[in-house]
Length: 272
Image 1 (cartoon, one colour):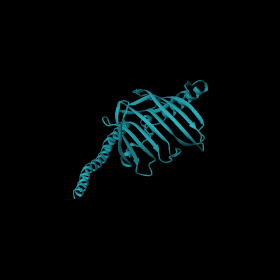
Image 2 (spheres, rainbow, N blue to C red; image 1 turned 90 degrees about the horizontal axis):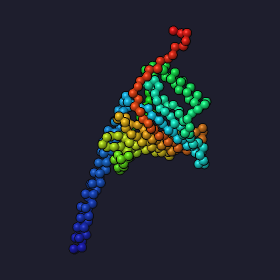
Image 3 (tube, rainbow, N blue to C red; image 1 turned 60 degrees about the horizontal axis):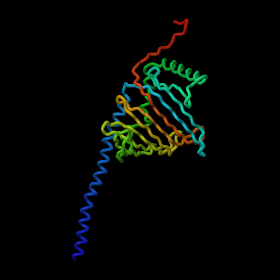
Image 4 (tube, rainbow, N blue to C red; image 1 turned 90 degrees about the vertical axis):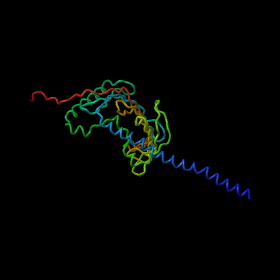
């Protein structure tokens, strides 16, 4: 009798002990869902608002591209250094160096012609046409952030530090087969700044094949998110062949662009 009582009492005690943990775990999951939205929405709103900022930057962009064939042999390996400036209020990437050497000879002449052509073409655009094609490369993270609030299931997975910033890491899984990427975002909950975005390719997207991955790291200047480094490693279709592409873009020497220059067409001699 005593043994039966102890057995029953033991089971009751075990249930009493485990029940609070079950309730806590359920509440913790709900808290994570609430926290992910509370952290993600202000960060997305802040990022989208920056697109309307009048603050611009010039900068240097160092590109390192490597290609590998299907047997793993490296077929391409080169670097390019660009100076990103503005022509007629539109971004323009001017090539300065290839493989660490400044352009010279015919390569320099070709680049100068490309620049002169861009000046001529863009000076002919009216304000409406210019507004339609205006594009800030620094704000292009390759992510439509508002979609993460509707077409993805997001949850807080852990905390992590980036450059001394204590960030919340949010994992975003698509809820629709139309979405082709799985994302992880590092967000500073104190400033609502997106500091890093990683992605995995879940399906083919144009010439990009599934299985690839990439990452972009940001810093904020005057409230504007600027990409400081991006990395991609994945397979793509190149000239009807499949190749592994590894690309790194490093951005530096950001300078605020505060001078507006109006470029007008030059009237040919002999014409009014």
